[in-house]
Length: 69
Image (cartoon, rainbow, N blue to C red; front, top):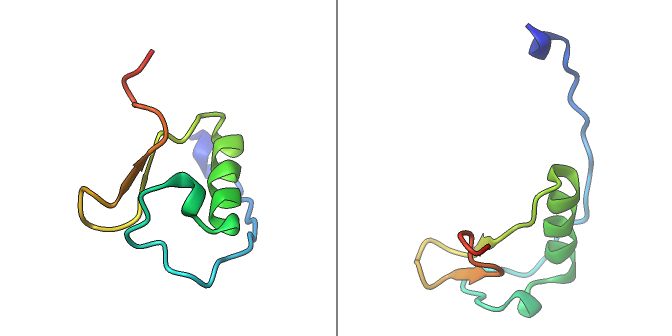
């Protein structure tokens, strides 16, 4: 199979020292968290639509409705 020859690429990104639990606004996330999300978008070629910042439904940041056209 093709996946047997795949080699992982590890990338280290800066972390953040503050908790993101309960944050409900994109602009309130730590700068390093925003950079992490942006890197995921670049690597996957797909925009991030929703960010969960905790276990409760209210602890969610909706950047773009996932079913919007």
